[in-house]
Amino acid sequence: MLHCGIVGLPLSGKSTIFNVITSSGAEVKPYPGGKTDPNRAVVDVPDARFARLAEAHKPQKITPAQVEFVDLAGVSRGAGKGEGLGNAFLSFAADADALIHVIRCFDNSAVMHPEGSVDPVRDWEILDMELVFRDLSVVENRMGRLSGKKKLTPEEEAERVLLGRCRECLMEELPIRSLDLKPAERRAIRGFTFLTAKPQIIVLNLDETQADLEAAPNAQALKKKIEDASLPCIQIYGRLEMDLTELSPEEAAEFTEGLPITRPGRERLISLAYEALGLISFFTCGPDEVKAWTIRDGESAVDAAGAIHTDLARGFIRAQVVGYEDYTKYGDSYANCRDEGVLRVEGRDYRVRDGDIIEIRFNV
Ligand SMILES: Nc1nc2c(ncn2[C@@H]2O[C@H](COP(=O)(O)OP(=O)(O)O)[C@@H](O)[C@H]2O)c(=O)[nH]1
Ligand SMILES: [Mg+2]
Image (cartoon, rainbow, N blue to C red; front, side, top):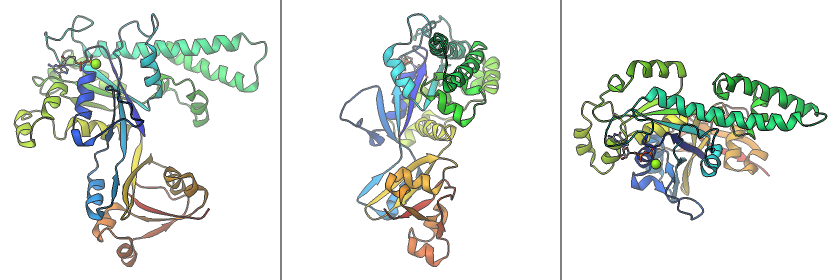
């Protein structure tokens, strides 16, 4: 399952956004393992195709794709070096597949700002710097340990060179994400769980009085920053959208008139996280269960089999595949699709497409 950690300065609206994402009653599942943690929630991925397939099959069980969100403690200026980011923060943030960075644009004198004024560009940079400092201290720790050794193994020597590149990048205040690393190099540093190596999604938390970014404080610099950062970025009306979750769609429409809210913030954010991470869904459909599975775009039929069960990858023979459009066009039935000639038999290297309905034939 995809894990997203929500980061940002104190009082930027992290908990508000977390509530927007998780407050839509039906989709929220209790945290697996029985533990309840008010700062963590598992949410169904909204997907109209999946809903339609479930409706057509009426299976005993429906299992949508899910994403976990964690509302992390606020990061203050200086936290990345001085007293540290805190163990709870680090253990969750290090675990995350992506960081959702909430930046305060709303200007409301009733809500204090830790820096004394509202400036989204400054806040954005403060948070990024704290992540850079933390990663830098991890790099220096490890390099210090390596340089204390008399002789390095070839692997350690390669690691030292690679960490040197990471350090150089961080010293320039750039995220490790911006380094052009080979897949093997990425794997080699995975264990350090660098926070600046994680994909980041920017959430600009606006007030209902701010019809667009133009109305945000320091708007011109903010627009430039968004362009330069080239990160996925969305605008959410945190508090307003949280209030909307309690209203009927008709009532909600009244409140959002004139605001660029076409889909609920929850849906937009989850879809964006999927996109930013290069994830796609494929489906398995039957009378027992209709299930959505998450894999990376570019993965093959045998990877898809492995996502279902290691046995299916090990004993993979072939995959029967129909695209979503064809499947629904021909009555949600493999038999019909076969008759119509749209059911394909694919080998292990077939590149799975978003929305494919797949059945794996295997033998173990
Ligand atoms: N006016 C306004 N207030 C907001 C908005 N988002 C959050 N707040 C308020 O700001 C305060 C801090 O929000 P919270 O989500 O707890 O921030 P956190 O510390 O980052 O988790 C709360 O009183 C929220 O009601 C917003 O979009 N507009
Ligand atoms: Mg909070």
